[in-house]
Length: 167
Image 1 (cartoon, helix red, strand yellow):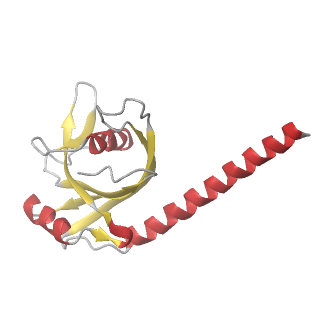
Image 2 (cartoon, one colour):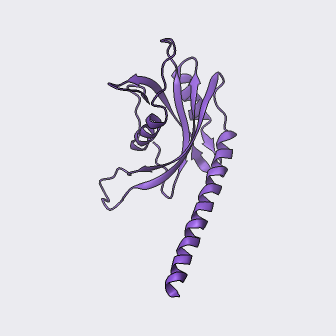
Image 3 (cartoon, rainbow, N blue to C red):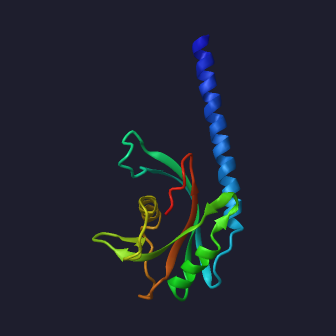
């Protein structure tokens, strides 16, 4: 009887945690959907996923992988990246003091596949690098059309049970 009580408690906890997670995802999706984006940008795809990452630290080696929830968009822009970056630096606060991060992307050709990656020379955090791996899996078949350059970027907000992983 005690065993089944413990199993039932664990199951109820997991169900409750899953419901709380879905409520948080919907809350941030709504907030992100109301966010401003620069004029002249085009929404290509909305992103919503859970990502496991390792917080880079040399102080506490007992820290293991953590989960982070990401809401974002893959967007295309015309013009200069400096204008896009400047817009997000001045309009990047969402309710709850969440920060929108924007990363310029380019289509790169590997030995056997095409993938998205941060533009050469753009500094990214370890968390951003992990997100790019997720993006590469999702958009592995994205190609340049007719040899024309596509100005792409990822803009996202994330949260977890930890401090902000952004820059």
